[in-house]
Length: 400
Ligand SMILES: *Cc1c(COP(=O)(O)O)cnc(C)c1O
Image (cartoon, rainbow, N blue to C red; front, side, top):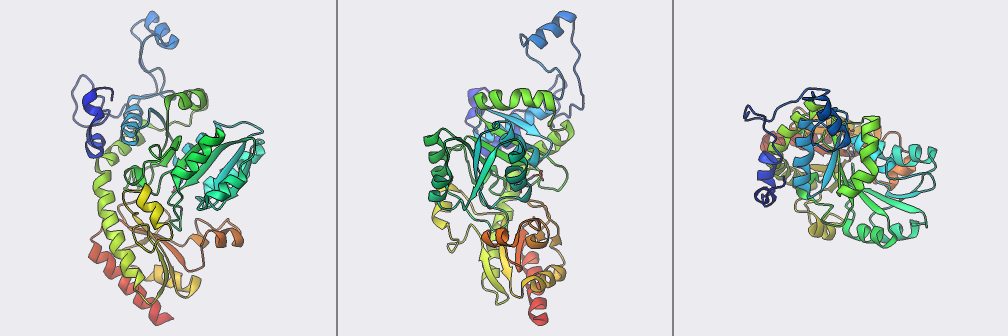
Protein backbone atom coordinates (compact mmCIF):
# COMPACT_ATOMS: atom_id res chain seq x y z
CA UNK A 1 0.00 0.00 0.00
CA UNK A 2 2.81 2.40 -0.65
CA UNK A 3 2.05 3.61 -4.16
CA UNK A 4 0.40 7.01 -4.53
CA UNK A 5 -2.37 5.51 -6.62
CA UNK A 6 -3.63 3.20 -3.89
CA UNK A 7 -3.41 5.94 -1.27
CA UNK A 8 -6.22 7.87 -2.94
CA UNK A 9 -8.63 4.98 -3.22
CA UNK A 10 -11.97 5.35 -1.53
CA UNK A 11 -12.88 2.74 1.12
CA UNK A 12 -14.93 0.48 -1.17
CA UNK A 13 -12.04 0.12 -3.61
CA UNK A 14 -9.51 -0.37 -0.83
CA UNK A 15 -11.66 -3.14 0.63
CA UNK A 16 -11.58 -5.08 -2.64
CA UNK A 17 -8.02 -4.46 -3.84
CA UNK A 18 -6.02 -2.97 -0.96
CA UNK A 19 -2.70 -4.63 -0.05
CA UNK A 20 -3.21 -7.64 -2.34
CA UNK A 21 0.01 -9.66 -2.45
CA UNK A 22 0.02 -11.77 -5.66
CA UNK A 23 2.38 -14.69 -6.07
CA UNK A 24 4.18 -15.56 -9.32
CA UNK A 25 1.05 -17.50 -10.38
CA UNK A 26 -1.07 -14.36 -10.69
CA UNK A 27 -3.98 -15.80 -8.72
CA UNK A 28 -7.15 -13.67 -8.73
CA UNK A 29 -8.30 -14.40 -5.21
CA UNK A 30 -5.92 -13.80 -2.33
CA UNK A 31 -3.87 -16.90 -1.48
CA UNK A 32 -4.02 -18.72 1.82
CA UNK A 33 -0.42 -19.20 2.86
CA UNK A 34 -1.09 -22.06 5.25
CA UNK A 35 2.52 -22.41 6.31
CA UNK A 36 4.32 -22.10 9.62
CA UNK A 37 7.73 -21.40 8.20
CA UNK A 38 9.71 -20.18 5.17
CA UNK A 39 12.68 -21.61 3.31
CA UNK A 40 15.90 -19.63 2.76
CA UNK A 41 17.99 -19.94 -0.39
CA UNK A 42 21.22 -20.13 1.58
CA UNK A 43 22.65 -19.96 5.05
CA UNK A 44 23.67 -16.37 4.30
CA UNK A 45 20.09 -15.51 3.29
CA UNK A 46 18.80 -16.93 6.59
CA UNK A 47 21.36 -14.91 8.51
CA UNK A 48 20.44 -11.71 6.67
CA UNK A 49 16.71 -12.29 7.23
CA UNK A 50 17.22 -12.82 10.98
CA UNK A 51 19.42 -9.74 11.19
CA UNK A 52 16.63 -7.74 9.57
CA UNK A 53 18.91 -6.85 6.66
CA UNK A 54 16.74 -8.49 4.01
CA UNK A 55 12.96 -8.33 4.00
CA UNK A 56 10.82 -11.44 4.12
CA UNK A 57 9.01 -13.80 6.37
CA UNK A 58 10.66 -15.86 9.09
CA UNK A 59 7.96 -17.70 11.00
CA UNK A 60 4.19 -17.36 11.00
CA UNK A 61 4.06 -16.46 14.69
CA UNK A 62 5.91 -13.28 13.62
CA UNK A 63 4.18 -12.62 10.30
CA UNK A 64 2.49 -14.47 7.44
CA UNK A 65 1.66 -13.23 3.91
CA UNK A 66 -2.12 -13.79 4.20
CA UNK A 67 -2.27 -12.22 7.66
CA UNK A 68 -0.09 -9.39 6.33
CA UNK A 69 -2.63 -8.67 3.56
CA UNK A 70 -5.42 -8.49 6.15
CA UNK A 71 -3.39 -6.16 8.41
CA UNK A 72 -2.38 -3.85 5.58
CA UNK A 73 -5.85 -3.70 4.06
CA UNK A 74 -7.25 -2.76 7.48
CA UNK A 75 -4.51 -0.10 7.88
CA UNK A 76 -5.47 1.41 4.52
CA UNK A 77 -9.14 1.48 5.49
CA UNK A 78 -8.57 2.88 8.97
CA UNK A 79 -5.83 5.37 8.09
CA UNK A 80 -3.41 3.61 10.47
CA UNK A 81 0.33 3.19 9.96
CA UNK A 82 0.57 -0.33 11.33
CA UNK A 83 -1.48 -3.17 12.82
CA UNK A 84 -1.31 -6.60 14.45
CA UNK A 85 -4.02 -9.16 13.74
CA UNK A 86 -5.02 -11.41 16.64
CA UNK A 87 -6.73 -14.75 17.18
CA UNK A 88 -9.90 -13.10 18.52
CA UNK A 89 -11.31 -9.70 19.37
CA UNK A 90 -10.54 -10.26 23.04
CA UNK A 91 -6.87 -10.98 22.25
CA UNK A 92 -6.84 -7.56 20.55
CA UNK A 93 -8.45 -5.77 23.50
CA UNK A 94 -6.45 -7.53 26.21
CA UNK A 95 -3.11 -7.04 24.44
CA UNK A 96 -3.76 -3.42 23.48
CA UNK A 97 -4.39 -2.69 27.16
CA UNK A 98 -1.89 -4.92 28.96
CA UNK A 99 1.05 -4.55 26.58
CA UNK A 100 1.13 -0.78 26.88
CA UNK A 101 0.98 -0.64 30.71
CA UNK A 102 3.05 -1.72 33.68
CA UNK A 103 2.52 -2.10 37.43
CA UNK A 104 1.73 1.24 39.01
CA UNK A 105 -0.15 2.60 35.97
CA UNK A 106 -3.80 3.60 36.03
CA UNK A 107 -6.61 3.16 33.46
CA UNK A 108 -9.79 5.16 33.13
CA UNK A 109 -12.48 3.34 31.16
CA UNK A 110 -16.08 4.00 30.25
CA UNK A 111 -18.17 1.63 32.31
CA UNK A 112 -20.52 0.47 29.55
CA UNK A 113 -18.31 -2.33 28.21
CA UNK A 114 -18.52 -5.71 26.55
CA UNK A 115 -18.39 -8.18 29.49
CA UNK A 116 -14.94 -9.62 28.73
CA UNK A 117 -13.43 -6.14 28.21
CA UNK A 118 -14.74 -5.20 31.64
CA UNK A 119 -13.16 -8.33 33.16
CA UNK A 120 -9.75 -7.49 31.64
CA UNK A 121 -9.92 -3.98 33.06
CA UNK A 122 -11.45 -4.48 36.49
CA UNK A 123 -10.30 -8.01 37.36
CA UNK A 124 -7.21 -9.03 35.35
CA UNK A 125 -5.30 -5.72 35.19
CA UNK A 126 -5.37 -5.16 39.01
CA UNK A 127 -3.66 -8.55 39.51
CA UNK A 128 -0.64 -7.04 37.78
CA UNK A 129 -0.73 -3.83 39.80
CA UNK A 130 -2.62 -1.80 37.18
CA UNK A 131 -5.51 0.06 38.76
CA UNK A 132 -8.67 1.03 36.94
CA UNK A 133 -11.47 3.52 37.44
CA UNK A 134 -14.74 2.98 35.58
CA UNK A 135 -16.79 6.08 34.77
CA UNK A 136 -20.00 7.03 33.00
CA UNK A 137 -18.23 7.85 29.74
CA UNK A 138 -20.95 10.10 28.32
CA UNK A 139 -19.90 13.06 30.48
CA UNK A 140 -16.34 14.32 29.92
CA UNK A 141 -16.32 15.75 33.47
CA UNK A 142 -16.35 12.17 34.80
CA UNK A 143 -13.18 11.36 32.84
CA UNK A 144 -11.49 14.53 34.14
CA UNK A 145 -12.37 13.70 37.75
CA UNK A 146 -11.03 10.13 37.44
CA UNK A 147 -7.59 11.18 36.15
CA UNK A 148 -4.64 10.53 38.51
CA UNK A 149 -0.97 11.45 38.11
CA UNK A 150 -0.29 7.86 36.94
CA UNK A 151 -3.17 7.62 34.41
CA UNK A 152 -1.65 6.22 31.21
CA UNK A 153 -4.60 4.82 29.27
CA UNK A 154 -8.21 5.61 28.47
CA UNK A 155 -10.45 2.88 27.08
CA UNK A 156 -13.93 3.15 25.61
CA UNK A 157 -16.40 1.43 23.36
CA UNK A 158 -18.82 3.53 21.29
CA UNK A 159 -21.63 2.85 20.50
CA UNK A 160 -21.74 0.67 23.58
CA UNK A 161 -22.95 -2.89 23.97
CA UNK A 162 -25.87 -3.45 24.35
CA UNK A 163 -27.53 -0.08 24.94
CA UNK A 164 -25.89 1.82 22.05
CA UNK A 165 -24.80 4.81 24.14
CA UNK A 166 -22.41 7.11 22.31
CA UNK A 167 -19.28 8.69 23.78
CA UNK A 168 -17.64 11.86 22.45
CA UNK A 169 -14.35 10.40 21.17
CA UNK A 170 -12.76 13.75 20.25
CA UNK A 171 -13.39 15.12 23.76
CA UNK A 172 -11.88 12.06 25.48
CA UNK A 173 -8.93 12.07 23.04
CA UNK A 174 -8.33 15.75 23.80
CA UNK A 175 -8.22 15.03 27.54
CA UNK A 176 -5.90 12.05 26.96
CA UNK A 177 -3.52 14.24 24.98
CA UNK A 178 -3.54 16.95 27.65
CA UNK A 179 -2.31 14.48 30.31
CA UNK A 180 -0.02 12.39 28.08
CA UNK A 181 -2.27 9.30 28.14
CA UNK A 182 -3.36 7.13 25.18
CA UNK A 183 -6.94 6.55 24.14
CA UNK A 184 -7.84 3.03 22.94
CA UNK A 185 -11.23 2.76 21.18
CA UNK A 186 -13.09 -0.52 20.68
CA UNK A 187 -14.84 0.34 17.41
CA UNK A 188 -16.72 -2.92 16.86
CA UNK A 189 -20.26 -1.55 16.97
CA UNK A 190 -19.50 1.32 14.57
CA UNK A 191 -17.50 -0.84 12.11
CA UNK A 192 -14.56 0.82 10.30
CA UNK A 193 -17.06 2.40 7.90
CA UNK A 194 -19.25 4.49 10.23
CA UNK A 195 -16.65 5.94 12.60
CA UNK A 196 -12.94 6.71 12.28
CA UNK A 197 -11.51 6.97 15.80
CA UNK A 198 -7.96 7.83 14.65
CA UNK A 199 -9.30 10.87 12.75
CA UNK A 200 -11.09 11.91 15.95
CA UNK A 201 -7.80 11.86 17.88
CA UNK A 202 -7.78 8.33 19.35
CA UNK A 203 -4.34 6.67 19.43
CA UNK A 204 -5.28 3.00 19.08
CA UNK A 205 -8.30 1.24 17.54
CA UNK A 206 -9.27 -2.36 18.22
CA UNK A 207 -11.78 -4.64 16.50
CA UNK A 208 -13.33 -7.99 16.97
CA UNK A 209 -13.23 -9.04 13.29
CA UNK A 210 -15.56 -11.86 14.32
CA UNK A 211 -18.45 -9.42 13.97
CA UNK A 212 -19.15 -7.34 10.83
CA UNK A 213 -15.74 -7.90 9.22
CA UNK A 214 -16.37 -11.62 8.87
CA UNK A 215 -20.10 -10.95 8.84
CA UNK A 216 -21.07 -14.52 8.11
CA UNK A 217 -20.53 -16.18 11.47
CA UNK A 218 -17.53 -18.25 10.41
CA UNK A 219 -14.42 -17.41 12.35
CA UNK A 220 -12.92 -15.45 15.22
CA UNK A 221 -10.39 -12.71 14.71
CA UNK A 222 -9.27 -9.33 15.96
CA UNK A 223 -6.92 -6.49 15.11
CA UNK A 224 -5.08 -3.64 16.84
CA UNK A 225 -4.27 -0.55 14.73
CA UNK A 226 -2.12 2.44 15.66
CA UNK A 227 0.95 4.41 14.61
CA UNK A 228 4.12 2.47 13.86
CA UNK A 229 6.02 3.79 16.88
CA UNK A 230 3.32 2.61 19.30
CA UNK A 231 3.10 -0.83 17.70
CA UNK A 232 6.90 -1.19 17.64
CA UNK A 233 7.25 -0.16 21.25
CA UNK A 234 4.29 -2.02 22.76
CA UNK A 235 3.33 -4.96 20.57
CA UNK A 236 6.23 -6.01 18.34
CA UNK A 237 8.24 -8.11 20.81
CA UNK A 238 5.22 -9.28 22.78
CA UNK A 239 3.53 -10.67 19.66
CA UNK A 240 6.70 -12.44 18.52
CA UNK A 241 7.36 -14.06 21.85
CA UNK A 242 3.89 -14.90 23.16
CA UNK A 243 1.95 -15.71 19.95
CA UNK A 244 -1.57 -14.23 20.06
CA UNK A 245 -1.45 -14.23 16.24
CA UNK A 246 -4.28 -14.82 13.74
CA UNK A 247 -4.34 -18.02 11.68
CA UNK A 248 -3.76 -17.56 7.91
CA UNK A 249 -7.03 -19.34 7.19
CA UNK A 250 -8.97 -16.89 9.34
CA UNK A 251 -7.10 -13.95 7.77
CA UNK A 252 -8.18 -15.19 4.32
CA UNK A 253 -11.81 -15.54 5.41
CA UNK A 254 -11.72 -12.04 6.87
CA UNK A 255 -10.12 -10.60 3.69
CA UNK A 256 -13.08 -12.01 1.76
CA UNK A 257 -15.38 -10.47 4.37
CA UNK A 258 -13.81 -7.04 3.84
CA UNK A 259 -14.70 -7.14 0.12
CA UNK A 260 -18.41 -7.11 0.90
CA UNK A 261 -18.37 -5.14 4.18
CA UNK A 262 -19.81 -1.86 2.81
CA UNK A 263 -22.60 -3.59 0.91
CA UNK A 264 -23.60 -5.58 3.98
CA UNK A 265 -23.37 -2.70 6.46
CA UNK A 266 -25.42 -0.42 4.17
CA UNK A 267 -28.21 -2.97 3.82
CA UNK A 268 -28.18 -3.85 7.54
CA UNK A 269 -28.39 -0.15 8.45
CA UNK A 270 -31.27 0.49 6.07
CA UNK A 271 -33.20 -2.38 7.64
CA UNK A 272 -32.21 -1.34 11.18
CA UNK A 273 -33.53 2.20 10.66
CA UNK A 274 -36.90 0.91 9.46
CA UNK A 275 -37.12 -1.66 12.26
CA UNK A 276 -36.22 0.96 14.91
CA UNK A 277 -39.03 3.23 13.65
CA UNK A 278 -41.44 0.31 13.56
CA UNK A 279 -40.60 -0.70 17.15
CA UNK A 280 -40.86 2.91 18.37
CA UNK A 281 -44.53 3.09 17.43
CA UNK A 282 -45.48 -0.30 18.94
CA UNK A 283 -47.54 -0.26 22.18
CA UNK A 284 -45.61 -3.39 23.33
CA UNK A 285 -42.29 -1.50 23.38
CA UNK A 286 -41.20 0.78 26.23
CA UNK A 287 -38.01 2.25 24.80
CA UNK A 288 -36.03 2.15 21.55
CA UNK A 289 -32.39 3.21 21.31
CA UNK A 290 -31.08 3.59 17.78
CA UNK A 291 -28.13 5.82 16.88
CA UNK A 292 -29.85 6.83 13.62
CA UNK A 293 -32.97 8.27 15.26
CA UNK A 294 -33.30 11.95 16.24
CA UNK A 295 -34.52 10.90 19.72
CA UNK A 296 -31.19 9.18 20.54
CA UNK A 297 -29.86 10.83 23.76
CA UNK A 298 -26.49 11.67 22.11
CA UNK A 299 -27.86 12.57 18.66
CA UNK A 300 -25.61 15.67 18.54
CA UNK A 301 -22.42 13.64 19.15
CA UNK A 302 -23.53 11.05 16.58
CA UNK A 303 -23.98 13.81 13.99
CA UNK A 304 -20.41 15.00 14.68
CA UNK A 305 -18.54 11.72 14.82
CA UNK A 306 -20.43 9.05 12.87
CA UNK A 307 -21.33 8.80 9.21
CA UNK A 308 -24.20 6.39 9.85
CA UNK A 309 -26.29 4.93 12.65
CA UNK A 310 -25.94 1.28 13.50
CA UNK A 311 -26.72 -2.21 12.31
CA UNK A 312 -28.06 -2.92 15.82
CA UNK A 313 -31.19 -1.79 17.63
CA UNK A 314 -31.68 -1.90 21.41
CA UNK A 315 -35.18 -1.88 22.88
CA UNK A 316 -37.22 -2.72 25.97
CA UNK A 317 -40.26 -4.97 25.65
CA UNK A 318 -43.11 -4.42 28.12
CA UNK A 319 -43.48 -7.12 30.77
CA UNK A 320 -39.81 -7.41 31.81
CA UNK A 321 -38.09 -10.78 31.45
CA UNK A 322 -41.34 -12.66 30.69
CA UNK A 323 -42.19 -10.19 27.92
CA UNK A 324 -38.67 -10.31 26.46
CA UNK A 325 -38.57 -14.12 26.55
CA UNK A 326 -42.04 -14.45 24.99
CA UNK A 327 -40.99 -12.05 22.22
CA UNK A 328 -37.75 -13.95 21.50
CA UNK A 329 -39.50 -17.32 21.51
CA UNK A 330 -42.18 -16.08 19.09
CA UNK A 331 -39.64 -15.01 16.43
CA UNK A 332 -39.33 -17.27 13.38
CA UNK A 333 -36.60 -15.65 11.28
CA UNK A 334 -34.57 -13.80 13.91
CA UNK A 335 -32.41 -16.31 15.78
CA UNK A 336 -31.55 -16.25 19.48
CA UNK A 337 -27.77 -15.89 19.58
CA UNK A 338 -25.13 -13.63 21.12
CA UNK A 339 -23.06 -12.90 18.01
CA UNK A 340 -23.64 -9.68 16.05
CA UNK A 341 -22.91 -8.17 12.66
CA UNK A 342 -23.90 -11.47 11.02
CA UNK A 343 -25.79 -12.09 7.76
CA UNK A 344 -28.48 -13.66 9.95
CA UNK A 345 -30.55 -11.44 12.25
CA UNK A 346 -29.78 -12.31 15.87
CA UNK A 347 -31.40 -11.35 19.15
CA UNK A 348 -29.92 -11.39 22.66
CA UNK A 349 -31.35 -10.85 26.14
CA UNK A 350 -28.31 -9.23 27.82
CA UNK A 351 -29.51 -9.59 31.42
CA UNK A 352 -29.51 -13.39 31.27
CA UNK A 353 -26.67 -13.94 28.76
CA UNK A 354 -23.91 -11.50 27.76
CA UNK A 355 -24.26 -9.30 30.85
CA UNK A 356 -25.32 -11.90 33.44
CA UNK A 357 -22.05 -11.57 35.37
CA UNK A 358 -22.63 -7.89 36.16
CA UNK A 359 -24.17 -6.91 39.48
CA UNK A 360 -27.75 -5.64 39.44
CA UNK A 361 -26.44 -2.12 40.12
CA UNK A 362 -23.92 -2.32 37.27
CA UNK A 363 -26.65 -3.43 34.87
CA UNK A 364 -28.96 -0.67 36.05
CA UNK A 365 -26.18 1.91 35.56
CA UNK A 366 -25.74 0.59 32.03
CA UNK A 367 -29.46 0.90 31.26
CA UNK A 368 -29.89 -2.89 30.96
CA UNK A 369 -33.30 -3.90 32.31
CA UNK A 370 -35.18 -7.18 32.44
CA UNK A 371 -37.05 -6.30 29.24
CA UNK A 372 -33.97 -5.08 27.31
CA UNK A 373 -33.15 -6.86 24.06
CA UNK A 374 -30.32 -6.31 21.57
CA UNK A 375 -31.19 -7.00 17.95
CA UNK A 376 -28.45 -7.36 15.33
CA UNK A 377 -29.95 -6.93 11.88
CA UNK A 378 -28.89 -9.34 9.17
CA UNK A 379 -29.26 -9.45 5.42
CA UNK A 380 -32.76 -10.88 5.16
CA UNK A 381 -35.47 -8.94 3.29
CA UNK A 382 -36.51 -6.01 5.49
CA UNK A 383 -40.20 -6.71 4.95
CA UNK A 384 -39.80 -10.30 6.15
CA UNK A 385 -38.00 -9.04 9.27
CA UNK A 386 -40.73 -6.46 9.92
CA UNK A 387 -43.40 -9.14 9.56
CA UNK A 388 -41.54 -11.50 11.88
CA UNK A 389 -41.09 -8.80 14.54
CA UNK A 390 -44.70 -7.69 14.10
CA UNK A 391 -46.12 -11.18 14.66
CA UNK A 392 -43.83 -11.71 17.69
CA UNK A 393 -45.04 -8.41 19.21
CA UNK A 394 -48.63 -9.47 18.63
CA UNK A 395 -47.92 -12.73 20.47
CA UNK A 396 -46.48 -10.79 23.44
CA UNK A 397 -49.54 -8.52 23.41
CA UNK A 398 -51.87 -11.51 23.64
CA UNK A 399 -49.83 -13.18 26.40
CA UNK A 400 -49.73 -9.90 28.41
C1 LIG B 1 -17.41 -9.37 20.42
C2 LIG B 1 -16.74 -8.19 20.99
C3 LIG B 1 -15.45 -8.29 21.52
C4 LIG B 1 -14.69 -9.60 21.59
O1 LIG B 1 -14.48 -10.18 20.37
P1 LIG B 1 -14.25 -11.76 20.12
O2 LIG B 1 -13.86 -11.84 18.69
O3 LIG B 1 -15.52 -12.44 20.44
O4 LIG B 1 -13.16 -12.19 21.04
C5 LIG B 1 -14.87 -7.14 22.03
N1 LIG B 1 -15.53 -5.96 22.01
C6 LIG B 1 -16.78 -5.84 21.53
C7 LIG B 1 -17.44 -4.51 21.55
C8 LIG B 1 -17.43 -6.94 20.99
O5 LIG B 1 -18.66 -6.82 20.51
